[in-house]
Amino acid sequence: MKSYVIDASVACRFLLREDLSDEAILVLRGFLDGELELMAPELVNYEVGNALWKAVRQGVLGLSEAELAYSDFLRLGLVQLELGREQLVDALIWGVRVDSTYYDSVYVSLSKSAGATFLTADDALYEKIRGEIRVIHLRDF
Image (cartoon, rainbow, N blue to C red; front, side):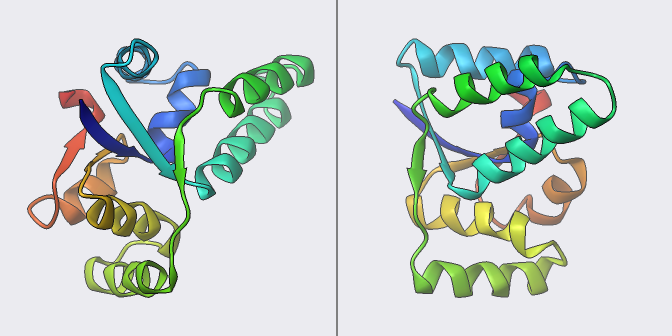
C-alpha cells in the first residue's frame, strides 16, 4: 500500500469544488477502498475547518453544509501523526531553507520522517520542494 502525507490543499478539495477536485476525489476513493494510506498532522483539521469557515463567510456553503462536511471529514480516519520536538524543529529549518511557511513545512517534515510521499495541490510549495523530498503534485496523481 502506498503511503502519502496530504496537506490541506488536497484535503480541502475533498469537500469544496475547486480546480483539481476530481483528482482529490480519486485520492479519497483510493483511501476509502484501502488502496492508499493517507496521513497528515493534526494541523490539517484546523486548516480544513478554516477553509470551511471561509466558504461560509463567502456564501459558497451554508453553515449546515459546512458543519456536515467538516463532521464527515473528521470521521474519515486519516492517520493523524503528532510531530515530536525533532520534527517540529526540522519544520522550522525546512521553512527557512526553502522559504515556505512554517505550517507548510510541518507537512514536509512529517512526510520526510514518515517515509511517505508528500501530496500537495499547492503550486508554490511544490516548486520550492520538488527535488528535495518525494513529492507529487495533485495534478500528476
